[in-house]
Figure (cartoon, rainbow, N blue to C red):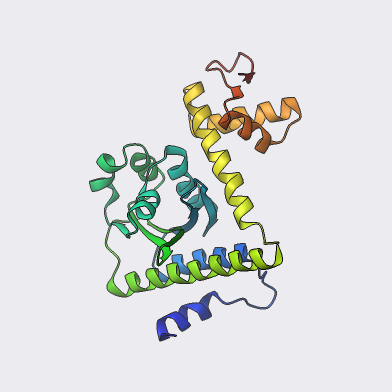
Length: 245
C-alpha cells in the first residue's frame, strides 16, 4: 500500500460513534475529498452497462443536486467519463461546457460550478461509476490533487466491490444498489414530467409529489408509472395533476 493510499484511507476511516455502512463510508469519501481537493463539493454516482444510473453519495445536498442534474438531462462529465473510461477534466466550465453539454453546462454554471473533474470507478473491464469533483472557481487540479482524486476513486471502487461481494455472499447489503435504482428511476421520471408540463425540474417534482399525495400513493410508485408511460402530466396545472395513459 502506498503512503498516499494509507494517508487518505486514514482520513476516511471510521471514528468512534460513526456508522459503518458502505453508504456512510462513501459519504465520508465525498466529504474528505472535497476538503482535500479544495473543492466546493463532490459526488459519487453508480452507473452500469445495463442502465442503472444514479447518485449514491455526495459531500452535501447542493452537490447532490448538481450531480443529479446529469441524470435528469442525460449528459455531463460523469456520463462522459463512464462511457470513455477516462477522466474528464474541465478546468473552466464556461469555456467548454456550453457546446459539450448544452443542457447540463448552463444548469451547473447557474448552480455556482466553475470547474468539474470526473474520475471513472473502474478496474480492468469492470466499471461501477464515477467520482465527480466540483469547484466554485475555474482552474486545473494540481499534480498532487490529481493523484489524490484518483486515489479517492480507487478507494471508492474498493468499497463498492466489497459491498457487492458481501451482498453476494450473505444475500443482503446495506441498500446502495436499491437506493441507486430508486433514485435513477425518480430522476428519469422528473425529466419526463418536466418535458410534459413544459416547466422546471422543481416544478416537475412538485407535480409528482402533489399527485402522490392526492392519490395516496408513494412517490416511487408514481415515478415508476411515469417511466413506464402509464401516467402523464398535463401542461396546465389547473387541469388534473396527472392522468393515466
